[in-house]
Length: 345
Image (cartoon, rainbow, N blue to C red; front, side, top):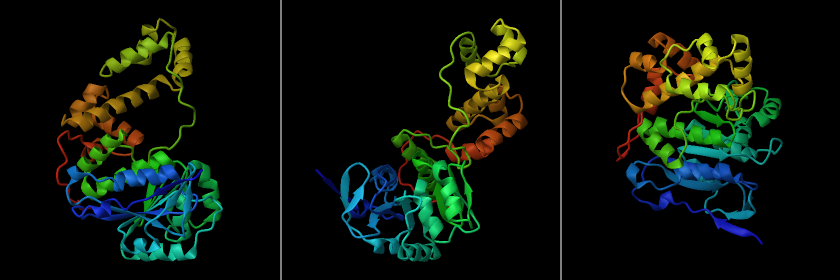
């Protein structure tokens, strides 16, 4: 039994919404999750944002009905002509690494880019944007599983298999599905500011602060919650990050020789004590920076870095931003967003 789902251009039916028009492309074999996050960010009516918020449409790039992952069929309302009016065009995944991209679609996307529209892809959607030629000479991101195939098929682009998202001349590409959320929230931040981006992220119950340069996968699996002699020490260190925790002091707290402690700590966390402590201090600093106006020196002292210089060094290395840049982007504002307006970027 086939379930038919009609995609409604919901935001266009709200006359109070007068902001940028975001268009998501529909195709046979649609990646359902990827389309869903585009509709959630750009297509959900948000009265708290005021009249300047996004309008949203879906556009079928081929005749319907179109199938989607999950066992249902989509009956689109708009055709590819919606692309010609869009301010933001999102390709939510693609049919496959070897699936051809219609030249008519590429021409339409090139024309849209030429008049100033932003092009965005999620996951395998990078194959569509790369086919336009607009990414030639640039660096793109896609899911690490597709990186080799994308590089092989489009040798004129440089594929970054690690970053969550990248931008090249107004063309945005992102890694796996969740990275698409990060990219869309970043676009909201650019259009309407950090307050609006945080509001959208809170509603999605996701962090609003994953920068594009953050790695999309770890070299080793995340270890299980440590147990044994090391676990109580980790809890104690998290509660006293401002303390001068030397490796010798950690070993003494666990009543181990230094050599035994280093081995046990690596086994329990997958990291050296120094790397683990720096990571915890950076995470604590992120929380302080986004939730208040504590001076950078005070934040550094509170999390145990000792100086603003040390905080900036480790923060930039881990996050890809300075503490000040991070604060300006991701400061939490608990009051209502109100009537948001586009910001200059």
